[in-house]
Amino acid sequence: MKNKDISRREFINIAGIGIAGISAGSVLLASGQIAPGYKPANMKIMAGEVIDRIKKNLGVSWKTPTVDTVKGAGTNDIVVNGITTSFMATLEVLEKSVKAGHNFILAHEPTFWTNLDQGEGLDGDPMYQHKQEYIRRNGLFVHRFHDNWHARKPDGITEGWNKAMGFDQYHYDETSHTWQLPHVMTLETYAIEIRRRLRTDSLRVVGDRNLMVRTVATGSNKVPKSVAPLADVTVHYEPDRENTNTEWERDLVSSGQKKGFIIISHNRKEEAGMDNCARWLRTFINEVPVQFIEANDPFWRTI
Image 1 (cartoon, rainbow, N blue to C red):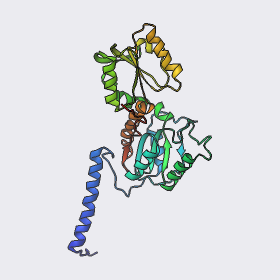
Image 2: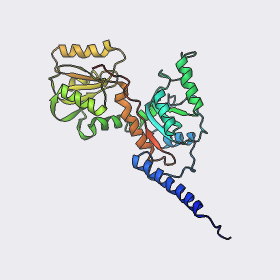
Image 3: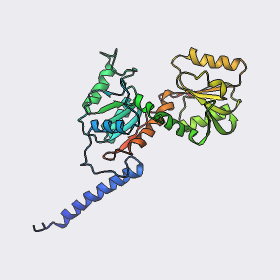
Image 4: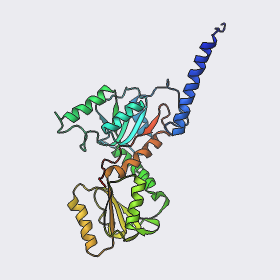
């Protein structure tokens, strides 16, 4: 077969396409959004295959029943263009994903604001209808990843949180379940350090600001009452009811115990775990970019 002659302009166009493809891939690789073995765009992967790979690489059996299901109108045969991981599929996160060219969103917390995340009690709610329509209109596949990401060993959320807080560099006491800071500091100084590490302005503190602290315990939205007395300071996210947590903390301090408590938003406690998820996904998904998009701290303050 004879080689087909091409013009100088055709050669430049063909070469330009190749260089552009290499350049785009290089930019994504440098940004950490794709794995080193990134494949060309014509190597397709379906949404269902992404979920299958997640289950295969999780290291534990997939929990059932589970809240980790599709949210909205997505189906397994959707061709994935890019993957977003986030603490929550807020409308802002969905919009940023669409702008980035991602149609697969893996979110840790509910998309529709209730624990089961099935739209219970939301029939006729304008915001529910708007968000559902946005997902459908943009062909998005939104899947929750909560129960099973926590079930992984190590827990995927905790692993990311420990890294964000610097705990992976600190000594951990198995008996008291506390971390030891590199040096003693005041409660106020440690609160400022956490604010810097987590990039948050919604942090609240219970206790004497001049209290000297060295050991740290952590909790969820319920104070670990068996562990908190063993630590100088306990860090947890906002309680579902203040009178069952914060008032207990205040009474503990008022009783004479030299303890401190730092309360952050739920978002700031678990967001780093979904950044960790993006890094994990890149170890076995290399057909499309994988990007962590922050849901960001939901609160701001006036001063």
